[in-house]
Length: 381
Image (cartoon, rainbow, N blue to C red; front, side, top):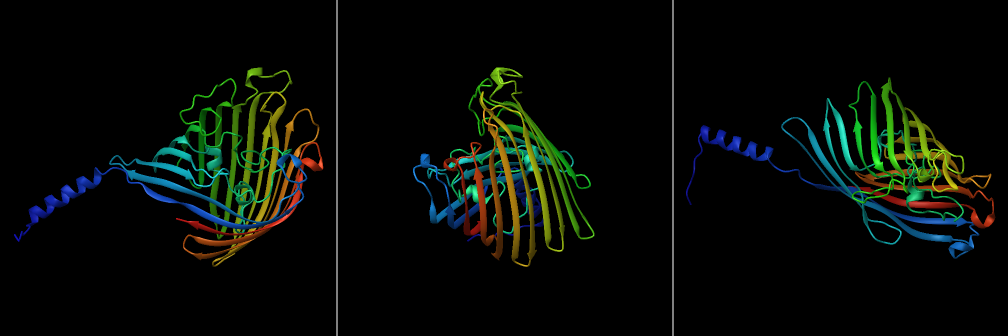
């Protein structure tokens, strides 16, 4: 074996070569995400024969998980570039699909640009409702379908019946987003997208028959004053909706352009957190007879000490749905839940909830109410 001795010059040369190689390395991808398993019990009074059964009562096993392929790299010019591709591993039919997929470029002084299938700026900057372990608004009970949505009630997903956030049908539509740097607790953002059908990627949707030309702005402020935390957010979205072929005002006499706005407030102190949220959609026709018009609000409080968290949340949403019916679809949920941090990235949660869904015709056959229990484990990685 030949013994090689390196002098100072040789060591410096090796360090320079090694540093150049490191700088020229391509972006590396890591695996992250979350995995949730649930045991649920529900007692409900759904008398909708259209779904094949009068009631669904009993114990079930549910799951909700995503795998994220993410990575970032800081370039020599100081700009950091990253990618994020998210795999939905739980779907109603049992198959998986790619959810969000986007690239981003950021700088401490210039902010962040996001290109691809991601939520809009108002959504990203929203102050979310707090919870004790099991979330309601845009949350766990909807993701795992803890109770049946009656056929007469419009979708919980992407509507004010299920969230207080700016998410009116466009969800992760391919878009351009810019987020400013945070200045003294303030941050703002803006998004634009040509088509609003959701996760359109390379699909060429018609601007005549689908939602299109969307624009969203959002802002938030967060700070801490002598141990009192404060968070405030506001967002606005506008988009030409499916009623577009009828022009600004169609045969129904309603504006086909959708306008949505929301606000959020959070105050925290000594382990306690209280949040309030409000969301509204004005106009915007889904079809010639159905509309996006809707409102939702949420009040929630939680307390955390050590590995324990407890909380209560109330969510209420209503949607006009058909313009031919005077009443609205309504969805109300009250959740009391708690959580225990078992270890890094591992949390046990449990909750008790009641719910009441009423469709706009106010018929028992197309409405549902009841109560339920959930027990789950939330694992992040």
